[in-house]
Image (cartoon, rainbow, N blue to C red):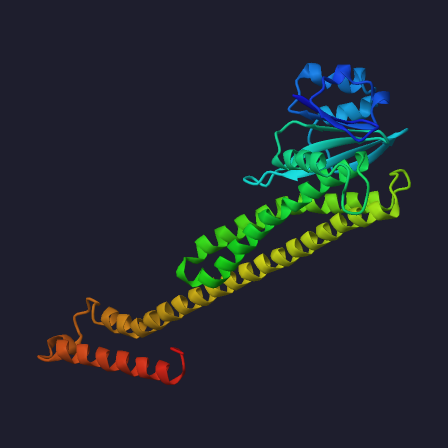
Length: 319
């Protein structure tokens, strides 16, 4: 599907004009959004806009790393949106020129719909800077980055629950949850850090034609990405701390179990020795013919066991 937004030289906004019927010289600027396009619609990137074949190829072969390429008077952006469920990156491509913006994406994205509606509402008054293709591109990038925050906040809530309710679950379950959260943080990091680097390049690029006022808005997106990057690093450190805590807790539990088993084994070792001696089949063993020999050996074994237990306790083995 291709939807179009065209702004006339008098400021009138027209939408859903067939792309083939638009003469770009008749409008101040246009925005063409290729949403889940068919193969025939994709051909218009070449036949109508005459974009560079390498840029079109990047649109066709997902998933590219976020980047900025310069093709004569056209700037080509590869952006990443986040799937709110899987946290996988989904590519959105932008072609930016002085009088048009072309967006291309294989998935239907709410961020794009929100940006589209916002541009239609604020096309003449963007709170301090004029509308145009650059304003529309900023709106798309801003919406994409804004959607990163709820995903990261959700992971932080999970970490907070793990930290506060960790004692009620087994160490194996806790470790599994920690590594699950850590893996999803890694997914987000693979999206956010390249987007941060891309935004830095946009701010410092001489090819992207923007005035000082517009750079302030792009700088705000860059600040958001810096904040997200810092949050991810802090959360990854927290997962590492939780992992180390659970490993230490598990080690302490194992040490306690081994200490208990060691005490029991040590107590029974002399008792086993005594039972082994009197279990031998020698003929000349005076105690075997003693009337009270059985009870005497049991009493002796009891005294040995209790004495060893009291000695271990005085030595601090049970602390």
